[in-house]
Structures are given as structure tokens and as C-alpha cells.
Image (cartoon, rainbow, N blue to C red; front, side, top):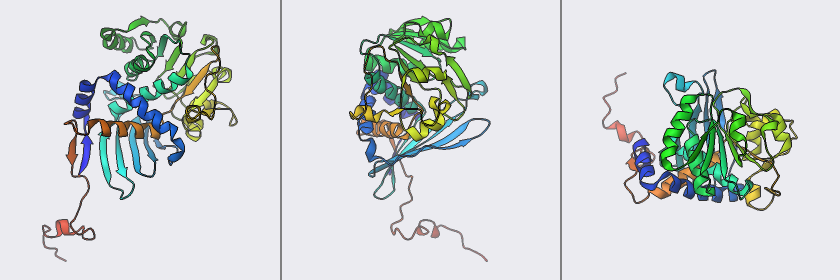
Length: 344
């Protein structure tokens, strides 16, 4: 039998545990897997691009457990009544190939993306950071805010979006949770005085939502919206000014902000900072940029965390996903006795 966490169980589990508690614990799982980065088989995600959006498979394996996520990204979906991103994921036992755990990952991807952002910022942002600026108030905005509060203690947020309804939604969700929220009049207004900036917009275009003149010394930029070929958010001059950190360099060169830069543009894989092989923030004035496109090891970590967290609870079901004949060489035997007589 395969353990299965569906949407209902994910919602019940998240409500019981609390979003900030989950994010804080998930950061530990993601960081543990980044520290053992070299143990994993890694490859850029497999993407199928269409005029509507993209559908991707994201695999990773540490030679004991194999994991993958199915995920889509369709920027026009909200206008048609659908979510921009949906996902599900699987863990399997490498020794026999059997799937052991299946989970919804639409909610879980929001958790893992925010947990990764906070994990990186804990190393790259200034320790005295107090204010977060959100450029984009879509589905990630609340999770990002809660992650930065649970991990870095940040409670002051300035937010701006081209869609006033998205900002209203964000305020409606976050104000009751005690955040000190500033509704900005523009992107420039939102980032003024911010210590950390998260950019997360959905348009599949080479956009410039931040220009170099908006970036103050010492800021950490969490650039999440450039996540497929032809989709960026930052002025290239910002990248040239700061130090850029990435997840998996071969994937980020294709999909991230640095797709705008020459092939030899320097970027540091973040796992090297965690293991002491590369420097992170070295001065208070340094501008640091996390060019985040999302990588399969993060999904692997999130699936591991949920699998372990729901063990011994009633927040999962067991499904009969794999046919298991008594004689492993007689798969037909499962149906043969029930099959109608075959007539030539």
C-alpha cells in the first residue's frame, strides 16, 4: 500500500500544525538536503512549453529514495477561473522502485518555496533585517511573509501589485495575523527602506519590475518570478551590481534572471555557502540576490517532511496503487480468472 495525502488531509494537517510551525520545521529539512547536495542525482526539470503555459516534471534521487513533482505554470489561468500553479509529488523506494508516498503539492509547493526563501535569507540577508517588501501579492505572498517571520522574525511588510484586488486579498489574510502592513503606491515605493525584497510576478515575459536605481545598499533580493525561458523580473544592472546565488546552475542559466547575462556571468550555487565552500554575505553594504527558479531537491525535502510529519496520524490514507500478484511473474493472473472467454 502507498501512503497518500490528498488536499483535504493536507489542509487538515496544516490547520492542526500551524503554517509558521510547518515552515520553520521544513526549513530544517531543506537545509539538511542542501548540505548533502553532492549525494543527489540532479538534472534540470523536463519542461513542455505551450502558448498556454508550461508543464514540468522535476526529479531528484539520493540513491535511497527517488522523488519527482508534476507541476504546471499557466499565467492566464486566474482569468479563466483556474490557479496559476498546481502540483502533486511522489516518493519511491530506490531498492525496488515501488512508490511509497504520494501527496498533493499545490499547497505543499507554496510551503517549500517559502521555506527555501527563508533558509537562504537567513544566510544572505543582514542579521538586523526588519522589513520585507513584496512585489506581487499572488498565491506566494502570504507564505513568504509567514516564512520570513517564523525564521527571521520579520513582521513589517510593504506590498505592491498591479492588481489592487490581490493586494486587498493579502491584507485581508495577513492583517488578522498581526503583520504591520504598508500598502505601497508603486514598486519603487514598496522597496524604499526594505531590507529584503521578494519579487514574485506571474507574467511570462521579460519584464523589468525593479530597476537598479531602486536598490539600496545592503538589501537582499529574493527573485522568484523568473522561472522559465523568456521570463524575468530584474533589470540586468541589478545582477551586475550584486552577488548572485542560485540553486542548480545549469537550470538557472536557462530559466532564471541570469538568462539575461553572458554565459560566463558568475553565480554561486547556494549549497556551497551552507557547506563553507563559498562566501555568502561578507559586508553590511553588499547586495545579495537569490535567483530562485525552484529545484527538485526542494520538493524532495518537502515530501520527506510531510511523509515523516504525518506518520502515526490520521492525516493520510493508504491507496492500492501498485498491482501485487501473489506470483510476481503472473500479473495476468490478477485478471485472468475474471476475464471473459476470449473468442478468435
